[in-house]
Length: 497
Image (cartoon, rainbow, N blue to C red; front, side, top):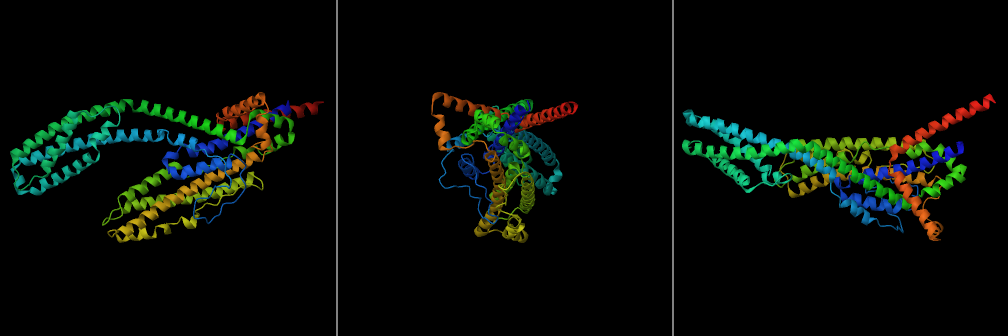
C-alpha cells in the first residue's frame, strides 16, 4: 500500500512539474498581442526550439549583455511558426473588454458635453437678449471660448465611428443632424461680438438646439442599450477569453508533452520499477511546484508602453515635451525597474534554497545601473529648458523613451526565460526517460500496438496537464496527508506488536 502510494505521489509530482511549465508559458502567451509581438515571437520560437525538444544546458546569462539574452542554439530543429501564427491570429479578446468599457465611458462623456453645450447656449441667448452685452463684449467672448472647447471635444470623439462600433450603425438622418449641429456651432463661433445681429444669432441658436435634441436622443438611447447589456457582454467576453486560454493551454500542453516525450504509461512504469527515482521526486517535491512570479507583469508593461506612445506621438518640430506625461512615464519606469531588480534577487534566493548544483541563476540583461534615470539625460534637459524641439532632438527623445520600454520588456522576458529553463532542468533531472533519442523514437514504430500505446500515453498526459497546476498541487497535498497518516498507523501497529 505504501509503495503504491509513493508511486502515485511521485507521478503527481511529475504532472505538477509539467503543469507549472505549461502555466509559465501560458502566462506569457496569453498576452502576446498586448506587448510587442516581434519580441515575443522570437522568444517563443526559440523557447520551443531549444528548451522543449531537449534538456537545457545550465548556463548563467551574461550580466552586462546589451541585447536580449540569446536563446539560439546550433542545430536547432523545430520551427513552431504554424502554432505561433495560430495564436497570433486569435481575436484580442482581452482588449475587447477594455474597449467595451471605454465605449460606455465615451458615450456618457458625449452626453455630458451635449448638456454643457445646451447650458452654454442658454447663457449665450440670455446675454444676447440683454442689451448690456453691447457694452460688455468680453462676456460673450468668454462664452464663445467655452463653446469652442466643447466643439473640439465633440469633434475629437469622432461621432460616426464611435457609434458604429457596436449595436447599430448611425443612420443618415442622425449623421445629417450631427453635421448640422457642428455647422451651426461653427457659425456661432465666427460671430463678431461687437457687431452681432441678435435676430440672426437667435435663429442660428434655435436651429442648433433642434439639432442637439435630435442627436442627444440618439446618444441617450444608445447609452441605455449599452448600460442594459454591458454586464452580459462582459460576462460573455470573459467566458470566451477563458475558453480561448483553456484551448491555448491544452495546445501548449500537447506540444510540451510530445516535445518532452512525457507519456503517462512510460512514466508510471519507470516510477513503479525504480524506487530511487520516485524517492528523489518525493524529496524534491517542493521544487517542482515552486513558481516565483514577477511583480512586474504584462499589464504594467502595457501601461508603460501606452505612456511612451502618448508622449512620442505628440512630439513635433517646434513643439514641446508634455512635462507632466513625461514625468509620469519616468516615475513608472523607475518603479518597474526597481521591482524587477528585487524580483531577480528573490528568484535567486528561492532557487538557491530548493535546487542543486545545476540550478540556473538569473542576471537581468539590464541591471539597476543600466535602468537608472540617467537613461533620460537628453529628455530631462529638454523638459527642464522647456524649449521648442528640433528634428534631431525629437529623434533623441524617442530613442530614450523607446529604449526604456525595451529594457523593461527585455528584463521581463529574461525572468520568464529563466523560469522555463529551471523547470526544464528539473524535469530532466528526475531520472525519467524524458526527451527523444534514436532508440526511443524507433521504438514507436516497432509495431502498431507500440504506436498506439505511445499515442495514448502522450494524450493522457496532455489531458492531465490541462487540469492545471493548482488542481494537482491540491491533489499532492492530499496524497501527502494520506501518506503521513499511513505512516503513523504503521508505527502505531509496530509499537503495539
